[in-house]
Image (cartoon, rainbow, N blue to C red; front, side, top):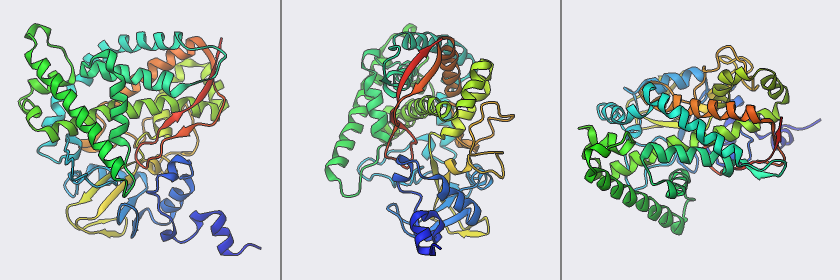
Length: 417
């Protein structure tokens, strides 16, 4: 018979609640996070971690508690940062996602027209044309990396369009997106310098774009994010506030890139891991409509969002003190079986597939959620027209991050009808 110590060594999530820390990036890069969060949801859904690489913090792990924090911007602030990592003092950037009211609303409203229904209708045909072009260029019967060839390719093209960014140089957007989300290990001075240099390169490039756009004749004005910022009185001086400009650029680049690209890859992986669901999709491609939000729930492209308590708050029977760091684990809320039936299963014909926390709640709910869903829907419509299966033929490689749940490699082979 095993002792408790032996059992805990084999299944560390069964040990004391203070014996593991769900903020470790390896939890996600090794894809071993599920039983740890299940334990927290069951035994301590609002749990205080006394020690971590990011200092002490609260884990909020159930669907309803996450929703309560996310909707409560009176007691929980975004201004100290939205990730476990504290603000870099060398680059004190701010953005509307790290701003509370009254700043948040007007800055968000300035750029929101780019994802308004009328513009989405215009963008859909462009996304379809690009999806077709990418899919038609892929090799048949030969392994290739789906992440680079499809996920990054399609989302970077769309990001370039949204910014009015020089198309031939769009690869810079991918590099900057990765740089914004890749943390630097503690004590890595050279890594921190390289990251800062890359962020300043991004800022400089977009400052030039701002001035070029401003100098262009009104007749040539487009409907891109930079032009929208220039037109709105709230953000018309954004270029003169470089840390605000850089912060908003980072938000829009990551929001328009990382989340969608990792859901594009995650969907292929989920269907391969659940062949009965792939068969269901082949038999009825109209299920793409409900499959898309299920992919986004299943993938949960951003594992968490953080808030800071503005005052003492009672939550789940615990007292969160003013100034405490509070982490809403979206990845755990999306596996909460008390709210989502068979939450650990990937089911493409769920009755209510949009009932998930991947996009957040309240004033900070993801601005581009409908654009993300549309890109996935259009891509899968075109995939199903051409291929019987996108077969995963090797292990996926995941990014080393506790914030972005993403991939660097997914080897696949295409099988046409």
